[in-house]
Image 1 (cartoon, protein in one colour):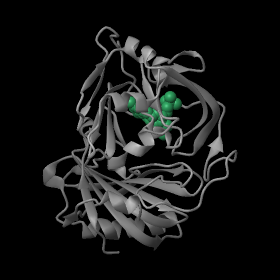
Image 2 (tube, helix red, strand yellow):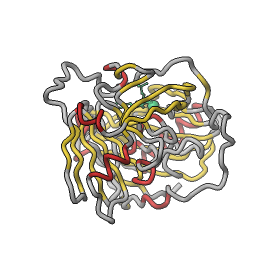
Image 3 (cartoon, protein in one colour):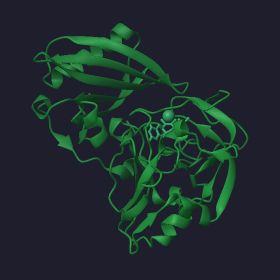
Image 4 (cartoon, rainbow, N blue to C red):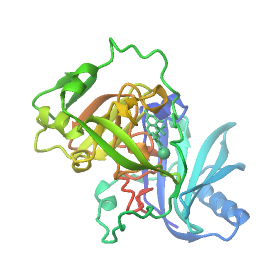
Length: 313
Ligand SMILES: Nc1nc2c(c(=O)[nH]1)N[C@H]1C(S)=C(S)[C@@H](COP(=O)(O)O)O[C@H]1N2
Ligand SMILES: [Mo]
């Protein structure tokens, strides 16, 4: 199981005590039971030059075929976190969440090549059917991995658009109402497996904002920053889609704080983690970089219909 691991990091992960992530794609490593998996992880951890004990912490399902296992390895009286991702009992990646630079394993790392995850699949979902690996629940489940922002001061809130653009923008909430509002009725899909049918969101097209900023030809990625320090990234062509909006209303009412007030992205064809809440900055860039979940192995694009949950093994 010799692998090419990537080194990555994310500023919000730092606030959670993770300075670096080592993300190792694994090709087709099959396990038959939890103890079998634990044994395999232990062998892998030894190769990373972490000795000492390994503790199982928890596991959960991601969709109907993927599983995520969490372990901890002891390193000089401190802990390195381990996340194992599998599809149908086959390991596809192992990630190490590392609190300090001196706890990095002594291995060679390669640069992550985003193009390997962007090849187009030919299998397309029939419309009207639930996407592969998803199940319906009645309501959106509120996610706020970094906490729900408190005391949002609307007089100070701005949406900045910058990066490789000719025309940097600073948009106030009232400006969003003047950009032409669109209402879309869409299903919403979280990568963990739940989907909600027919939620209504209203707001200007993300395209109308991006166009106004006049992006340079070099731009390929849209990097999003939020009030809670959450970040994510989407290919610019997904952001320019006809259904991608900066939502300010949900089901006919202003967004509730829990759902991203004052403004959030809604990009229906991508998994929910790309629909960033409490947004305050849109950065248009040519070079790919990981956002919060992408730095933990999640997919750079995240298309629901092709089950782009994690980066490729
Ligand atoms: N700023 C921010 N945006 C976020 C998240 C977050 O933790 N912080 N979670 C994401 C995830 S994983 C999902 S599934 C959706 C959930 O949207 P909801 O909380 O409105 O149901 O928000 C996404 N946007
Ligand atoms: Mo999610």
